[in-house]
Length: 358
Image (cartoon, rainbow, N blue to C red; front, side, top):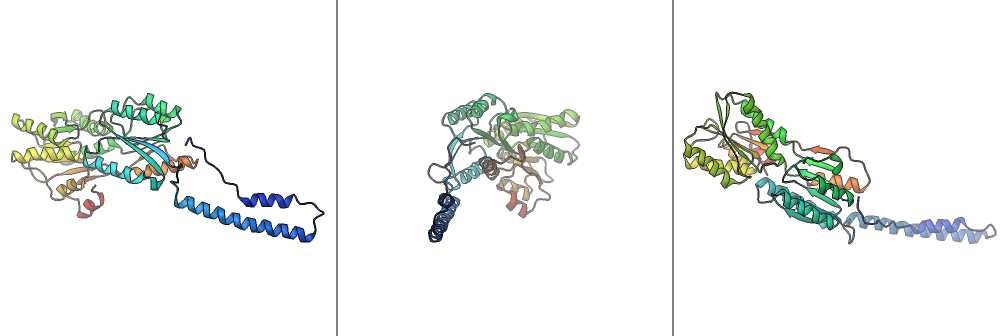
């Protein structure tokens, strides 16, 4: 996949063996023996040099001129605790010590991400790593990358593009995340569900998956109602404003379905300001996603009710894909789905908080 040329070193032993094979039959036994001894000495010396070279390569795969160049396009690391953890994971993996030269670009807007991708293509990176802000609009730029011999690897989020345009996709199953959460909510057995639905950035895979499951349930059940459905764009303050507006209107509600932890936190701030109880056995069920450690601690204290896991640690999977491609190995699977679960405040443990909190 890399466009650079790999130089193969020829062992001196091969030349020595070749010279021995070309000796004439008129050579004396002593001359032949001396030649053979010299060849063996050359083989030993070359073998030692080759071993030393292999050891040096193993210890320093990121030697000058041999770095794998990656352009990484991600969402704003300040978007949420999940994104901060995701960005830190990428930066820890794609270092010179690990054999990479990495460049980063951040945006929550698809057009800005596409511009960044085009710049990375012009810079002739070896791999383009992409967490798309929106699922659509990527076909053209990915085709440009493929034409330039650049391997594209999706992480965190899927896109609506032909699988032929990218090498691999390491992602969460956002649809399953939504279904797991909605099934948990259904199991609570409320007589009526009056839900404040706070959405993430519209068009993102996370928003679509977590919204889709709830929309389907509301459409199917007469006692499921959306009090309001608005985007807070993953932002805590905007989520607080949405919930405060509902409270001020006097409309009754008993569920907060927030599509990430930060928005759930903002929603709870509005509830606290209005002295509305929330959590296990209280007036309002609070649901979030991403499993920030502080959010799981809210579950442990039973101030929240549910949190859906979204695994931010994808860099090691990407590194493994790149190494296989570099070695000319065939990838076993095109799409790698990260294993994730949902947590209930009545069953979560301190061990869960430590193990799964990000």
